[in-house]
Image (cartoon, rainbow, N blue to C red):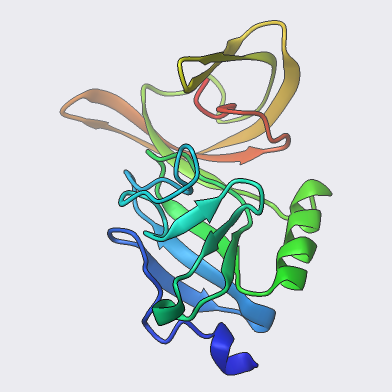
Length: 184
């Protein structure tokens, strides 16, 4: 049983996607480069997605073809297409359910590192605002407004000047899971 959960280098990974770590019970950490989508927009297949095989929006899982090991690989969370980072997937349904539950209960901490233009007024801050999500023609946008409350902790990790002027290295830790909350 364990053997069929191992990718053996045969998973149909998207461009530049690599397996970083294999954990217990079929849990995998993948390195997702910028420009690769966590999932296809409408389900189905997408050559620019994490995996290049079919994806089910209902299952939130990729369906591996028989020649690539068969079965499902569950997507446990998402990163925006323009964001690079580590993304978790599971080969076993029970593992997927447990990790998704841990995310839902805020038992998993997410941290993002970003280089931004300018210097923040405060080195460490808690950002709180209401975010309004707007869906239009297949695109999702967010802006400060009348939506749900969002909260994130920001810590400045460095600052300097480049050819574009003042720049800062920030560590961001979202406390809520609102769409695009770190972009605003």
